[in-house]
Image (cartoon, rainbow, N blue to C red; front, top):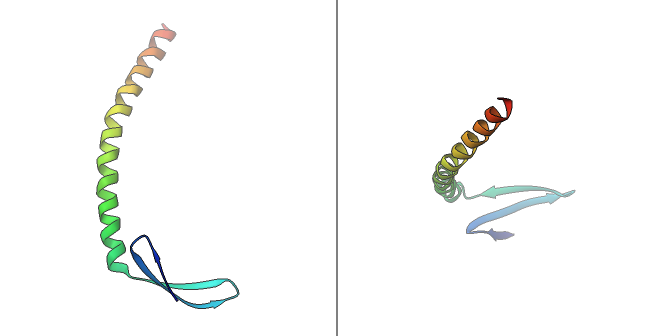
Length: 67
């Protein structure tokens, strides 16, 4: 049997005792992973700038409280 999960063609072979051996088209998934990783890095960079600013503010507040 063949099923499609998101644009990936997956062949399911030998279903025995709820153990499923899956063969996946690897090239498509590698391409997708690369795209996802680049997008994730872009998002992380955007988030890091915002997070760093927030952390600095928190540190300043803590210092003021100690003094």
